[in-house]
Length: 129
Image 1 (spheres, helix red, strand yellow):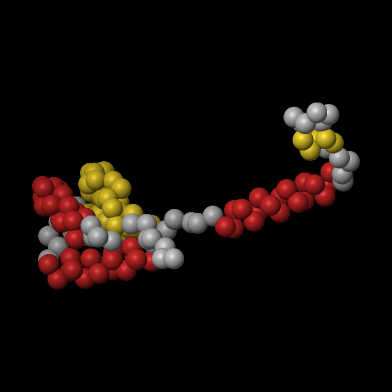
Image 2 (cartoon, helix red, strand yellow; image 1 turned 120 degrees about the horizontal axis):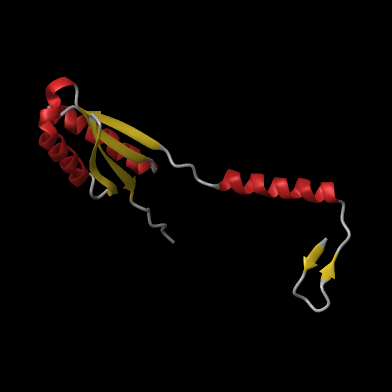
């Protein structure tokens, strides 16, 4: 096994190949375990969502963002409510504005079929020393 190919002369070492493969696999597994998994929480609205329901869901979103999860808020248009696209967009923008201090908008309101969605990611927390 070549250890340092750029050295003069190149450094080589005789090793057990199966042991080498095992240790490489072990290192990869350790690196994979340390990576952070992104969690996406979804919050569903209707185009005619009332203030109380909006505030209730807003509190849930704040909790999710504080925990470090991303929040995907969407307005689901059922039947003829698709004519209220503007209302849905206004609702999502109001939602994003209310969560401004807890997270930042990753994806602006976008209509996909019968859903208009927005994605918010948590603001990075500063570590105190």
